[in-house]
Image (cartoon, rainbow, N blue to C red; front, side, top):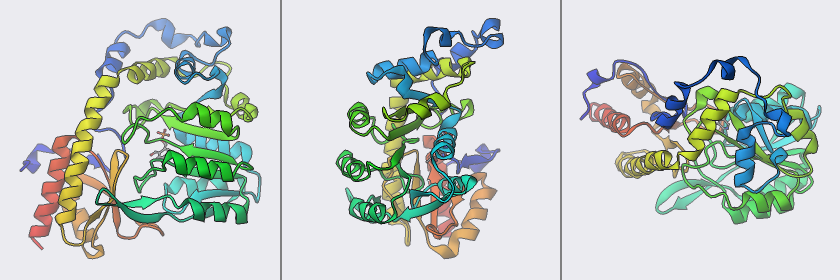
Length: 355
Ligand SMILES: Cc1ncc(COP(=O)(O)O)c(C=O)c1O
C-alpha cells in the first residue's frame, strides 16, 4: 500500500503523457548542444532534404524522403491536412467514439463531420471496442466524404484496426483522402511492414505518427507522417524552407534509435495493463477495455464519479472522467509508472471500501 504522503504533487494521469520520460540518452545529448545549433538555421535543406530526421525515417521505410513530412506535433498534421484539403461544406468522416479534437477541426474551415460508430466485443476475455468495417463502408458510400479519419490505436477507446480490415476499408474509399492517426503507435504493436505497401497501393493515404507518446517527448512537439504519392501538394505545403527545430529533431532521432529503453517501459506497461484488466474486472460495475495504447478506458458506475474524482484529487491523483456524447460513464486512465498505477488502484479500492 503506497503512502499518500509520498505524492505531494498532482499526478497527471489524465493527459496520455509518458510518466517514465524519454530515453536518458536524450538528456545526454541536450547537455552537449552547441551555440551553432542554437543560433543557426539547419543546413539540411541545401542537401535536398527537409531534415536528417525525415531522411532517417524515410530510409528505414525505404521511401523517398519527400514522402515523410514533419510537423509541430501530430495535432498540427491533422490541422494542416484538414485545412489544406477540406473545403467549405465538405465532409470528414470520423469515428463517433474518438478524440474530441477531431470533432472540432472541420468546423475551423467551414466543413462538417459525419460519424461512424464503433462496435463492441471481447478480445482475450477483455471487453473491447471494434472497428465495424461493413458499417464504415456503408456510411462512406452514402456520405461520400472528402476526408476519412481512422485512429489506430484510437483515443479514448484504446482499440486498433487489423491490417486486413484496414486494407478492406482503404480499398473501398479510394476516392477520399484517408488519414490514419497512429499517435499511439508502439504501445500495443510495433508493426511497420504495412506502411510502404499500403502507401504504394493507396496514393491518397496519410499515416500520422508522433514523438509525443511512445517516445515520451510531448514537450518537443514533433509529429511526422508518411504520405501517399498523389499528395505532392501536401508534401510541398508542409515543407518549411528554413528548416524545423534541429535540436528537437536530433533528440527525436536519438529516442527513435533507443529501442531497448522503450521496449523495457512498454513491457512494464503491458504487465500493468494486465493487472488493471484483472483488478477492475473484480470491482462491481467496472469494465476495463482492451488497450493498445498508454491509457485505458474504464467504465464505472455513474453514481460514484463525483465522489471518486474528489477522493482521488485529494490524493493528488488526476484521471479523466469523460463527459461527452459517446462517453457518459467512462474514465480514461493514463498508464503511469508501476508505483503510480498501484497507488491509483489501491486508492480506488480504498474509496470503494468506504462506501
Ligand atoms: C489521438 C491523438 N492524436 C493526436 C494527438 C496529438 O499529439 P501530438 O500533437 O502531441 O503529436 C493526440 C494527443 O493527445 C491524440 O490523443
